[in-house]
Image 1 (spheres, rainbow, N blue to C red):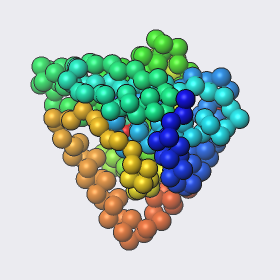
Image 2: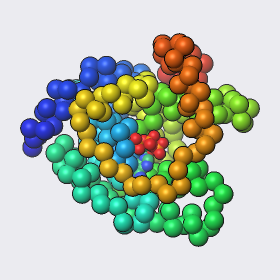
Image 3: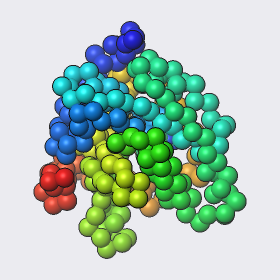
Image 4: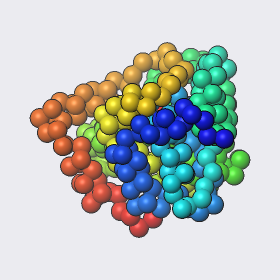
Length: 247
Ligand SMILES: Nc1ncnc2c1ncn2[C@@H]1O[C@H](COP(=O)(O)OP(=O)(O)OP(=O)(O)O)[C@@H](O)[C@H]1O
């Protein structure tokens, strides 16, 4: 049953978000008829807005698909996921909670790159569960700003012209990873998230920000002060050079 809060959130979800998600999903055939989509729900603004946008799409699209949310708790069970569970319930979406002590493992191993270790582990767990439970697609909340920053990091630190793809086949787990927010700059997501008043609660990371990524993000922020349409221009470049639609 769709509750009152969901209807209100749908009403306030900006057209720009609905349009950009619909366009990206369509351009890369992210979701097909009969798909069961697993959404990685960290409880942060990106994945929470993603869940809402996919719920909206499910209601208006002729393509029939199901949605389930999955939260990996990196504290191993100390995070109170009640708010996330209630949010999913209000959207009539099943919620899987999976505690795994990632932070503890990082501490025990004295990991020198905790951020990338944690991200890799979370990705592995998400894909593993998607595969195990037979989900066709794993949807993640990466957005355009993430893609641009990743491209900058790869270019300036790794000598590679490479970034996140809208849709990626993971042969190891036989799963498609899809990124329906990939046409949206983070700023748009931030303002939409406050407009629809999505509840935000995610496990607190004890290791802080990845400094290189933070630096690149600040740099991009400076660039967009000078070129306000800069991220959309980068989107055009990405579509031309790296994001072909022949998946
Ligand atoms: N603990 C988690 N449980 C489930 N999914 C997760 C988790 N952490 C990350 N994800 C998924 O991977 C995506 C990218 O992860 P990242 O750590 O970059 O998140 P983020 O940019 O901070 O986004 P968010 O605002 O959703 O937390 C998230 O948007 C989400 O879909």
